[in-house]
Length: 322
Image (cartoon, rainbow, N blue to C red; front, side, top):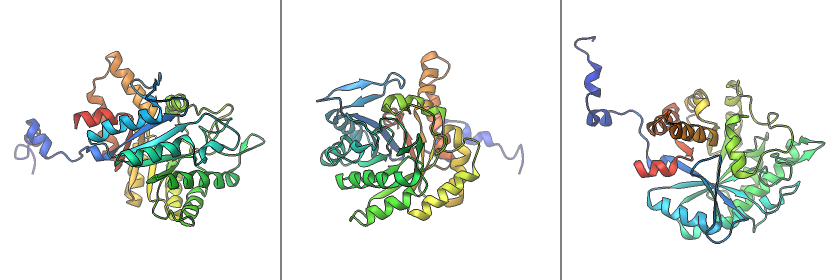
């Protein structure tokens, strides 16, 4: 039927009607909060992240205390990033059983009921800032795999529920899955950064995590932003190697990728609403160009595209309004 019999505005005429027929809804359990723990900080110390307004780096005690506050508000999951005291060419702090992430995971599992996810990469831990082992200033894929597996295993043994490899090396999901399974960690979930693009939207994160490369860029291992068929191939490979959850990163400029991945594979799908997206919106709100409504609109677009999990620095804000 057509107008005047059909009047779609009837279904938009007041807030109650709009709410009950809303197709896409945000829930507290959709959100994963990325958090930074800094080994240089002690007691309950925190550091402001200048490029990410309102976000902080925490000590172990500080991150646990804040996580408890957010858990009381309905937070279910966090994604943990570590900033170590010592960096070297082999990222040895990343797989140290007494490393900053490992100690933090143990404390979080002791004092909260949160699902703890850990970022598995080397860039914060290497003295050159790249995500793997270097040989003549080139990141060597196959040499890197055993180190990533050591990191993932150390996180799992510390109590991490989910390990999330973010390096984009070929074959790392299979290597990590085999290592976990051979060491009685077969129940540890792998959330793969399956389609991770080389993006300018990561700039604030690199400041927050101290992970900027000292030379060159990461375009030889992170994806070209022009490609979507390649993303589908990456996701397919990671699923075949044992990934339990797949991720698209960034989110906002890659909504088409999220939709294609979800439609094609019907897998649990995460999207990372990255630091640059967060800071861009926060700056727009601060300048008066945007309102806080833009936060919800942005996050709805990511979920509407097909994401089941929203990894976002807006998580504390959303916990307050949902």
